[in-house]
Length: 419
Image 1 (cartoon, rainbow, N blue to C red):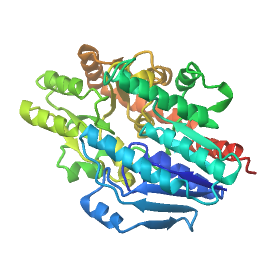
Image 2 (image 1 turned 180 degrees about the horizontal axis):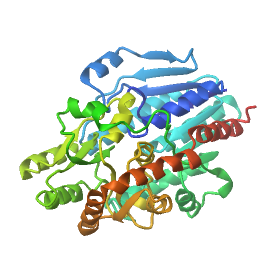
Image 3 (image 1 turned 135 degrees about the vertical axis):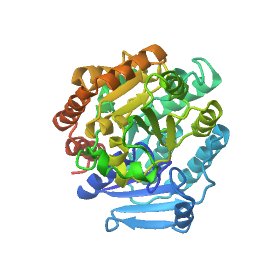
Image 4 (image 1 turned 30 degrees about the horizontal axis):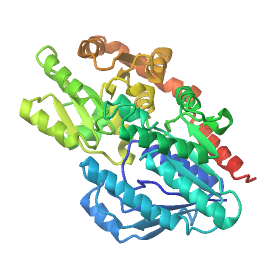
């Protein structure tokens, strides 16, 4: 069985879901599935030296030829949203041209980041099905619901031109997908309300490999020495995308308001994203010296990243929780850290935190609720180890990696009618 993927990003790029992609690749290899990818030159979360090295790698085989990577040149991703959109569209055009020429494809596997990837895969499916004179199934992995996420982030509104275009892209993708993998009941309910038949939908939650992500004691954590961080402070750590949907202004306001009250409290943000430059500039301009921003770290150091804080943070603007489930939640839990979420109360994330009793969920956008939650975790820190232990135990019991990746393999085989 041979599947075709046309992703926007691929290793060695560092994105928040890198561990999911890596685990799935290994599962496909172990199942005897060959994956062929057409991807642009890596750009996100890597050094100039690594990008320069990969500009020369137009073709790569991994796992004894079970993964075949074709790379094409494309200008570097920047922070300008218009240029980023242009880059995505150019990438899609090139991927379409290359994808329809792929040979021996049994199935197309697409993802929802960026939102045009689903439409791209649907168009390639139509062309290859006509070329092969049989249906080439398309499985869509839905990790983010667009344009709902833009509406919730107040980046557009229902009825706007962007929203109308987004809904057409969304409907086109759902209509042509043979199977749609969603990460929660909320996602399933959302797309069923938009007319997607239930039999098309499979729920497979995100996971974290607890063998790769675990608690690292502070004395052994290499990031403290690498970045000159004191081991005597109380740290709240965020790792992931630094974008416009994250409520970074709220975080900075909390840091400023608690600076004198809790002088040994420090925030560390690890990641990249469209809002990073503005964030760094604001910290410097307003003299917020209890916040440190660090770049993405190599995946091999993921345990050090999520063990850096006494508390792991998830933060977003109001409304985002209805159409996103941060996978970093499970990395925080795997590292045995309590979860602090500034998130929509009626969201799957907050329901999970309450159910497992592994942290605190404060109302999204509320500075009072956020700072109150921080004070609780700071002053009652002796209970943090218990909260963290509950989170890791839940992962072992409910979100086993082998079970989840096995479900992906079964969905692909079923869709391709492959024994």
